[in-house]
Length: 229
Ligand SMILES: O=C(CO)[C@@H](O)[C@H](O)COP(=O)(O)O
Image (cartoon, rainbow, N blue to C red; front, top):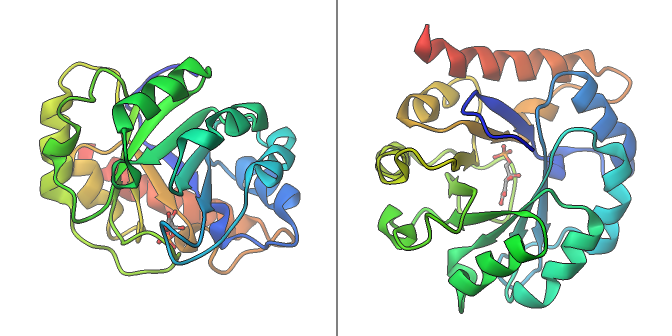
């Protein structure tokens, strides 16, 4: 997985057909997804439950791009090896999941994955000041985590501050929650390069009508890239 700061669209399969993950993943990749975003929720750290490492391992053969696994679970450390074994390329833990995020990020890298740290809307950019050399990705939540389809919360000042703090380090800024063609330019302008989008990608399409996914992905990408035009 090489590093670049081009805009990457990462559809969240939380908005896919849960009876048809393999076909959904193949469809979004064929339609232009750069990464595949997998939301793991435990019904404890967040008030919703999705899938665990066995399901993520079953997704792996279908993902030809980058499998970006976002853990909304606490604790994280007992499960790091299971997600490495499941084939995650990027594994992101929440700073709020505690208790020792520094150790968690070291363990994720130690298990051979890229390490991500996620920040809830209420957590300031400065919380990652001492983690910048241990992380490959900072995920800025623009909704309170747990559900797809929520309204975007403006975190552009936090994104800009993080971009400044990151400097020349090869660290992605990922945005998660309420990303669509209207909000994508705001976060791209502020310095984000990975845009997670669930409802805005899957809305209106299906594996039988995947062209809609392609159209939705192209609209988000064009809106984000438009800020540099
Ligand atoms: O992690 C989460 C929610 O907790 C996200 O990945 C959402 O799944 C994004 O969904 P949309 O806001 O794009 O519908």
